[in-house]
Image 1 (cartoon, rainbow, N blue to C red):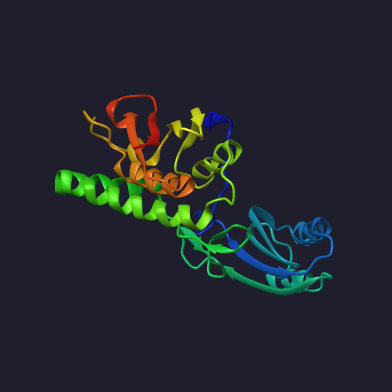
Image 2: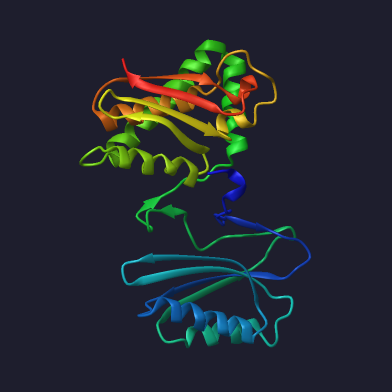
Length: 264
């Protein structure tokens, strides 16, 4: 899928905005009908002229956790009254709130990032920042730095492959699972060839993070971390040693990065 057709999915950690009064609401609930619960919360916010800027819902079992960033600039009455009205909604168990302490942003103080419906805790990094760190390591340590970065990627991919490998590996699983890279912001995948019996996979990545932010044009493929990661990941999926070769790279001036994954 083209990047212009993809929607942004904000992972709230801090909300940057100046010269407006904003607050974070953290709500724990056990709504029988979650849609009705969302409507009830929205009605209270609307009643008090609190404008929603960001809203995240996580469901775990019978519990729901809402994080709302609201603009209080038009509020009618006291903020505490709005909080009380939310607490009185049937199914709401707890409400926490905080207002912006810094002029330029509000920092989340009530949550930790997760994925998989709250089952797995996540670490969030800016991909331009991570890419810059990898670039500096390669620049400072040359081929030794490249080998080190590859090994970090390989070990991480092996851990993930062991953790998330399917009971039965199918072509459909591979086609769906590579979308994880897109969902987690690594890049936008496009499978060009797939044969799980050989095995052989050709994957093209648009906007792959490791090379998308490189300022100096390279003469050789640049994605050592990602090559290591895919080697470890797919070796665990296929239960055999695979090799990964990067044949096209954004850092070289190609419009995308492309990898050939196959048995050694």
